[in-house]
Image 1 (spheres, rainbow, N blue to C red):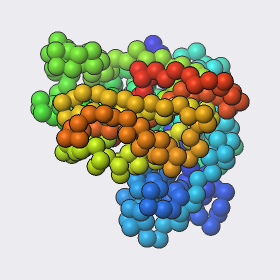
Image 2 (spheres, rainbow, N blue to C red; image 1 turned 90 degrees about the vertical axis):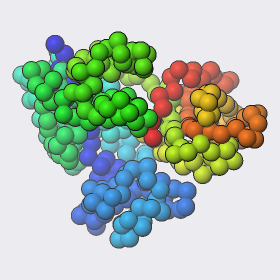
Image 3 (spheres, rainbow, N blue to C red; image 1 turned 180 degrees about the vertical axis):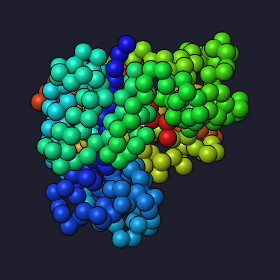
Length: 362
């Protein structure tokens, strides 16, 4: 049986700022540029007590917490700390799969270190991160990847939670279905319409009924409800795409998507700063009231260099939608794809595979 660890740094960007500037310690810190179109990159736990969260408009964060200290993000510094943390993880296993600058999966089934258990390894990693970076991390230990990620959030901040194989079914049963990987707002709503609110209720559904309603994803939901996850840790998996999408409360005409496109572009841009690769292609996704899916993409000569530039290109892509003005839209998404290493200078635009566009269900 595999042994997985999920390491998640606590309020990473804000914690780095508080570490490096003692005057910020104990104060509500919001990592964001000021401005009407800016969004929060990170918030310290002191700021979170006021309701401030990542991806929230900075203006709203300022209203919620007038005493917050706003600090512009310094991604070069965060990347340097992230490399330190990853080096610590690699002391214990070669199988490390970074998800972003501040979190990663580890497979410690056959560890490099001589520690006797996955729990001991998780403790050692957390202690080494604290000693060598001055930061805290939370960890989850479980026999499946998706369970390790749930576990790391269980005792945040600065916590460790272990789900043992014999505990999996009992642990999952009372959880809201939204805690299952791949269940966003839309799927959560569809399951709620069927009276399914907990993982235990999802587990009680026949797999064939779930497949009939949700296709292959139905079988995947059935497996996860039973604690079955065949996912493996894939080290050094390069970022292929990053994107965000939003489903409108009510269908809107194309012209009414401007503000949402700007917000999604900001969120996508800040998410892309968590990787050391550069995106070459911008993609706009739209879904009509009739569920017709439209995508428009563009690969400029130079990669987008700011959130404002990403917004501008996304809005230009919207102009390429040739449907009647009376068409209403239920969803819009903004994505970055065709990532390349910073040292690479592409001679020509690459191909962007829409199948790799892992959309965040906002």
